[in-house]
Length: 239
Image 1: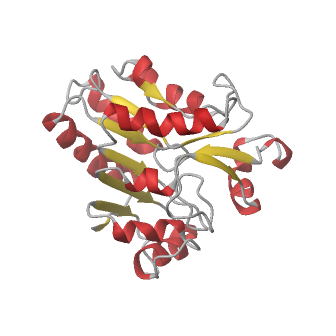
Image 2: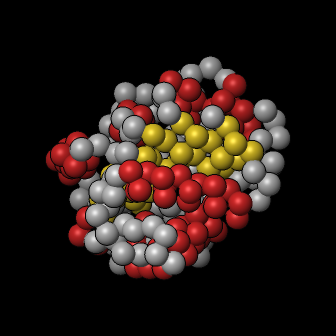
């Protein structure tokens, strides 16, 4: 289901309403979160609703999509740091039940353990996604096998270039990341993707209109039974 909304702020309100519905029906839901600039308005809206007493995360367990390899949780560009400063520290979630892949232990055991922890929790009820300009979801770059589970990926130069604005220079942008695999993402019962801006239009067209192919990892979402895609007019401009 594609929903085109005029502003990022209104997308945030529409998306947050879905979280309210899910948590009203299942207060102990398992939520998959994403990082980057795309979900910031949504997280701000969830914080607002939580402070107003209109939504509670006190029984929620969460799993994040990915983390940079080599960054500690305390590093100000780590995704654990991002989640705590933009969402977790401002809502009534139990930090002990929030999970982000380790950027320091990327052993086979640790990576497999992330998938096992999701399975043990009961599986993700809703996974939030952004999308890269090359169609990546999580950090699953083009060419990633559609059956992949949590793994380490070498980031493409386009991905590192897109993320360098968060760092002092391109040299500081990590070259690898630990990420949920495409199959890990697809195992979620519901998926919400948000895309903003004309620079995402080609990727959105390939995701929604193109063939299902590892060349555009997000195209696999065509095979999922319950996906909602929120787009602003720029992101939807080539549909």
